[in-house]
Length: 269
View (cartoon, rainbow, N blue to C red):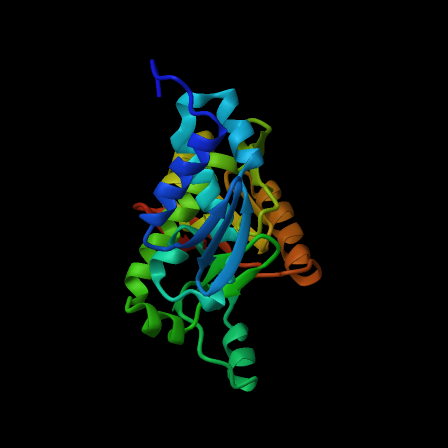
């Protein structure tokens, strides 16, 4: 939009309409002034463009960003369970570490089996659709409906996790040497699952003498520390054990490390 006259309100609405008509995951139903009627994944929605136009007027050169934000809002209001195609939810697919006992619960309730992949320490990698106030687990019926395999799902989920981590994750680094701690505590539901990002963990390794050790006692907590001081190692490991036993969304008291770019269970020497 640089060097161009900004769109007025009517022209802005017409431009959004033109783009939505061409959007493969959106059924455009009609427009009256600033009010759009669309259908996404069988859900009919009413969209008021007022706030989007106001954002556009603040920075007309960012029309693409305003439009992409509108699309994200539409997709976030779409229940994942009704998605007809993988493209409708691909941007919201996330991995999530869960205890393997979750599979027993699914079986006992006679629910469709989850899409998952085994991990370490009696954990599995489940896959979810991130929704505004919750998550929806992806099961084998979803994969069949979408015509994709678990490998494609896994790769997309990891890519989304890496992107979200870069955009919004918070890490606290304290201490020096053997007392160094790095804590992930973003509270977005995926802190422990960031264990699946070896490039992130490898970037932390130079901060630690000895081996870097990682604990994920519950869903919303990941801590990295050194094994160079046995007293510190024992103390932190004990706290991880307590948290895994007492905290909500507990995962494991098993410790992990990274070797040759791969996550491994940490073996005490």
